[in-house]
Image 1: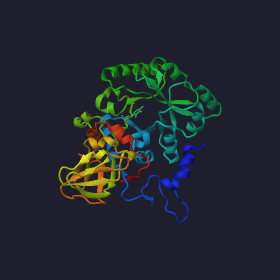
Image 2: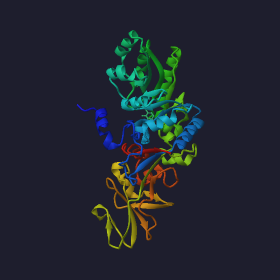
Image 3: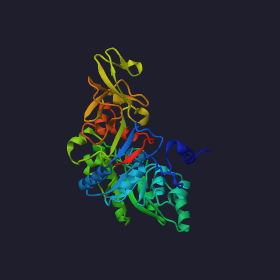
Image 4: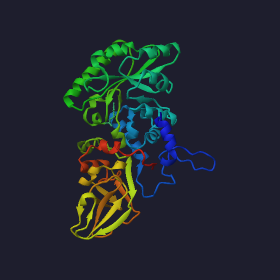
Length: 399
Ligand SMILES: *Cc1c(COP(=O)(O)O)cnc(C)c1O
């Protein structure tokens, strides 16, 4: 059977990933754009380290809490290791959280030393052989006492967070059963946190937090010293009662307002830490009656210059961008026309050839009018879809 790892190792020369450290060979960092086979025209992602640091400071200023930085799903598109390397030195970031075991392991393999919380499911075997030895903190919500007993006799330790289901109905120990699970954790297990996920339904969140508070009081009475966390980006804006001991945002750290209304509050100055760019492949003029795109989706009524961009929905640039998203070339914003195909997008640049092949085209970045939120709004889509669907194969450049 071919595991993901062997597949990737085998595919490395094709994908331009993996480090070539043989003498005389230029080392190629995973996802870097130094691959000799990658065209200058091909789309790339920029990671703005300064903006990322700025957003961390903003979240800390607003909440006055330490941060569990959620960097799951390939660091919200920026590359999970890229993000972790930028966040690790920041004192406001106490822990980094991912969902999948594979990402937690990749962070440790990349030399990340800070606490890592893994919020996804795992087997007892994985707990014992992969998670424990790497000092990854699993999010626990069921009984793993067999593993913990073996650990105790071998003098090994685990640090865990317990997940409570206070009404989200997803994962977690039902809140009525939480104290039994928490009470059963002893010996080699250190309880670093107790957490829940809020439903983003204002009235019900009050009840969720009350359920968590009952558990907190019980812990107090038992002299169980631990910390509680619940606040994702939504709560940063909407529910200060959820800040508790630590906050646990993702999207806000990447500088993206998860709801249009949050952008208008001015509670935090968030600056996008991600950009998607490519170079214009071709500029041409359409005569009246000439068309562009499958199904002749665009037909020129007057002489119209158009530019073809070598980026499409296979790269994570949404099909829905044709509903009204605009692309920046030079200082001007141009509308996406026709439809977005797998690897191509067409924009109308007007009555003059105001762009040229080779020009940099910005699909989104940190400039007002070109922010990820602007694109998502034009697409009628959630900004989460935009960030989390960026192809992991695109090169990431930290700027
Ligand atoms: C993704 C996630 C977060 C962060 O959510 P954002 O909306 O990106 O801030 C927090 N907690 C859990 C359990 C998550 O899965």
